[in-house]
Amino acid sequence: MKKIWVGILGLMIVLAGCSPKEVIVKSEDGTPEITFRLIDKAGLSKEELNNVSEQVKEATIIINGLIETDYVPAEQIDIVLYEESGMSYGDVSQITLRKVNGKFPIFHELTHSLLGYGEVIDGKFGGSSSGFFTQEGLAEYVESEYGSGTIPGYELSLHRMMRQCIEINRNLPLRKLTDNVLSGTYFRSYVDSEEENALQLLSYIHAGSFVSYLIEEYGLKTFEKIYNVDQLNIAIKESYGKDIDTLETEWLDYIMEKEQPLNDKEKNDMKGYYELEKTILQIDDRYYSK
Image (cartoon, rainbow, N blue to C red):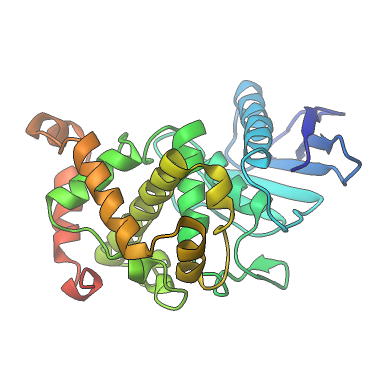
């Protein structure tokens, strides 16, 4: 993995959200530098924009030091910042960030843009060739471990949220989540309904918690072997010496041992918890069946 250092060159003051601010990231081994252009459509103050710049630099250093991939990131990546909440997303050369509880999911989206995400079609991530599980799982791990530290909007760790899924008997089968064809049904909500959005959230929690478990228990080097690969379940068996069902049992036992379910006070303090649980319980049972 190339070692990088980060410097700011020729920064421009953003006026009326139009002029981009550039964050230059250079590598020490002669590979092309990455230029991040921060395009402010959120009306951020100079201090807020500088804070985003620092987070981009920090995230780039951390992410590039995690695992090695064959993916070569774009030499310029535009990061467009919006104030209103909503879905953040990115492709090869542009990331759209929207705030969740006042925070931009910088670490999550940069993980995709720097380490790759499925196949690239016309300059965008296709995703279908390798499913979504390891890519979203690693992005959730990085955001939780180094970024916001919690599930955005719920202020709980990935493992704690996963414990609550088990508590209400709504854990999704990993064999479906890791299937290249079926994973799109779980991770990509194309219907704007509360149930579809809740299913997507559950999928991210499962992937993030499981990937975190693999990294915590088996290390990054082993996880590196299964990141963004075709035939994920075969790669898991070859890399870990255990099939996905065995690892799933280990992981669920780990969560049950390490984490406690939410108590009534925690549920009451968490904004929207009861509405979320109600919606999760309304999701069709076929998604939970193995």
